[in-house]
Length: 399
Ligand SMILES: Cc1ncc(COP(=O)(O)O)c(C=O)c1O
Image (cartoon, rainbow, N blue to C red; front, side):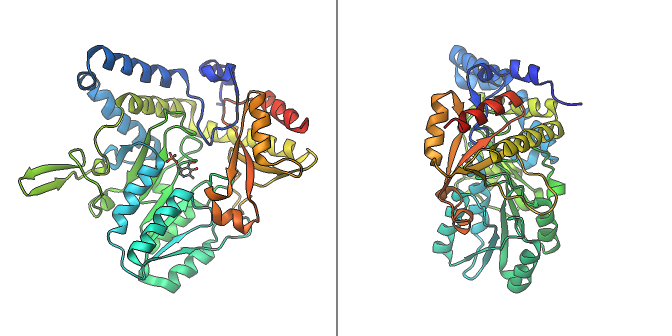
C-alpha cells in the first residue's frame, strides 16, 4: 500500500504556501502535530503549566512508547531531549568519562560537525585519538578498513561513532554492517540517526547500535526543540551522565543521590511538554503512513530529482552512491558551474522554493576530501510531488 499523497498534502498546511525542499533542515509538520502542540499550549495558558502536565501524564508516557515502537526497543530505553545534538552529547560525554589517554574513537569521513567538535574537545581534555576510517569505493565507510583499525588498536578502541546519513548528501552508511562489527568486537556503538529517523525503518536490534540519537523536526515532521536518545539497557547502567538533576536522579539522602535506572537518567527537567506531545503525534503519524512507504517514495522522488538535475547544463550532482546496493536517500546535493550555492538558495527563496546551502564546515572531512567548499541541498519528503520537483528544476534551469 502506497501513500495517499493528496491526503497527506491536505494534512500539511505549509504545502499550499511554499515549495519545501529543505526537509533535511526542518520538515513541514502535519496538522495533527500542530494541533497537539497548540492545544497543550492553550491548556497551559488556561490552567497553569504544571496543572496541564498533570492532565496528560498518561499521554506523555505514551510518547516514550511510540518512539520505542518505532525503533524496536523498550520505552525505558528512550530519553526525550531537545534535539539530536543534546541526545548525542548526553551519550558521548558520559562514555568519555571512562576514556584514558591513548584510547581511540573510530568514525567516518561524513561525521557531523557538532559530533566531531565534541570529540575534538575530548581529544584535548583526555588525550584520546580520533581515527577517521577510510571510505570504500562508493564513499561509504569501508568495513574492511574498520575491521583493520580494530585489529590494529585492539582494546584501545572505546567507541565507534557513525552518522547514518550525512547532512550533505544522499549517502546511507552501512549502519547495520558496522553494528555487527561493533558487537563482534564488543565496542560501544553510537549512531547519529538525525537524518534517517522518519525517513526509513530504524530498528536498533538490526542496526546493532548501543545508542542512537535523533531529532524531531527533520524527517519525523515533529516540532523544533525535540529529539530523543535510545540507550541499550545494559549500557544505561554503565553510564553516568553530566549534568544530572532531579529528573535524572533522586536526592536519596543528604550526601547521596541515586541515578534513575532507565534512559531518563539522560534527561534534565524543563522540557516542553507541548512539543514532546507534538513529537509523539509526529511519530504516530509516521508509523501510520508507514516507514517503508516513506522510504520508497522519498527514494523515488530523490532519484527523479537527481536525474533531472543531471540534465541541466552546468549542474553536477554530488551525492555519494555508497557501494552496498543501498539506494541513496532524500537528500540531494549539487553544485553549479556558474552559480554559487548561496546564489541558488537566494534565487529559489525569491520564488517561494526552499532549498539550503550545505557549507564546508558541516562535514569538513568529507568536503575537503572531495575538494568542495559548499553545495546546494534540495531534500525531498513524501509529501513533495513530481510537479514540485519539475517546478524547482525549471527554476534552476532558468537561472
Ligand atoms: C547528521 C546530523 N546530525 C546532527 C544534526 C544536529 O541536529 P540537531 O539540530 O537536532 O541537534 C544534524 C542537523 O542538521 C545532522 O544533519
